[in-house]
Length: 349
Image 1 (tube, helix red, strand yellow):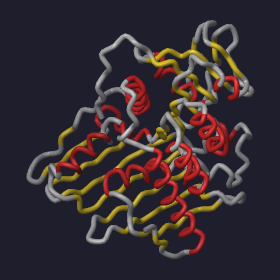
Image 2 (cartoon, rainbow, N blue to C red):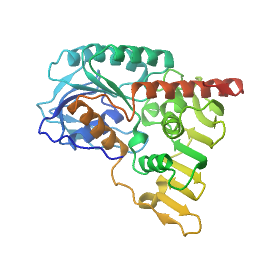
Image 3 (cartoon, one colour):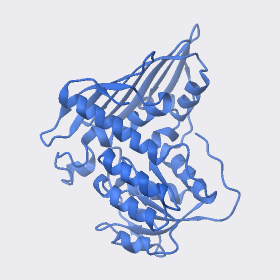
């Protein structure tokens, strides 16, 4: 997905809160964007030393140390960030259970908010965020990065244009080993963070609704951990009149990470597999040989951050992804959770 740049030298003053794997990913994206100025960081434990933040491992790869410079202010408390008059955009990369109170506090302080997914652990908590956003001068954008990911944003255009006819069937798959932060003991297999269903699979849940809207109902099966979280899920979404759509998400992979999709159109099959590298996206049109579709070499993190920065610069609320979209994705995930638990089809509308 392309985003237009603001024709101005003004920079957005950004504070990143939560300096784990995603916090460092976001910091690097801000450093690479000329429209951003990192003025502050915040974490209760991990802070830069002499302007250098130590790298951290996630469920994809280890990120090297990041050089912020000594001019970037380092806080341990969110309240100090909120009181900083220079900060315009607050990027929340903290654990999911902290999102609701932190997001609401930032909105009430008049800040623009970019919040990592999921927006909250429950749709009730996410609804509270939505209500606060409605009454605030700022806005909140959830970090649903697949809407911006090269090869995936291209698929959205194809679906909207019906470039190869209507979509008949679609399959999405996202597989990962248990995240690094879980191996370090910060995740105990409990359900407070939602497991793979809410932390990983929600990306495909959101992208399914981005392409096709909210399904009427869902049927899901899965593997539940001893702590109650669903760490492997296969969900089938009911769209009356079609298409047939399902998605699989898992933390049970022994090693590594991969994401893929296969979409069958009336006149073509589109297949994306991250493991193929530069040939990840392949198109096979009716009566033609398969061809590789070249994707932008960047990632969805840089594109979503470019988009939210432009929203701040242009003083407009996001429309590609909104707080209501984040709420809707959670509601669908909760329906999947209930289906896994009960073995029943669960209505969403």
